[in-house]
Image (cartoon, rainbow, N blue to C red):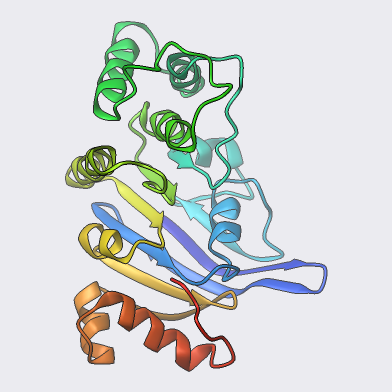
Length: 248
């Protein structure tokens, strides 16, 4: 389980997070959605220990990230917004390296790598160095790194952005399998059809604050429209009336 408890974060005069709280439960996919600049990536970075909150706390399976970052990170698989591949490593070497960092090794690790290479459609470039990879290829490798050790908790920032239809479906199937196994999965996505299909619970953020939450159906009922994109736009219009043409 991942908990954000009253997170506050400043960047000089910019108030990136303004008391954001949410709970992502085990066995569920929780979606954190909002316009660009709403604070989603900042919140994720605090949970996986890249940033420190100015106030509040982040917990991973009841471990306070600020107090024991390494222990919290062992329970996490993370695909950040910046993929950060090593250009001289192959796709397979990236996944193996991250698996080893999390304590996996031997035949079990190699079997998991092969499974991910196949599922994510990396066979043709699995043994090529990452320099020159397309955006979609980079994303597949980043997903493989996040999932190779089958972590209890997953944070996926735009998990299918740049993928083709078949690869996107494979990612959704992997997420569904991990959810069925009781994992906690926290995602951010601008693709509302994907959010609707994947997420059990949604948290909508604007200006660093939570402005609405509930299941997709609960949010539809609350706003009185069926299309989830319209739900998002209507909720955002209430809390960000000065913004026009905002994209989810």
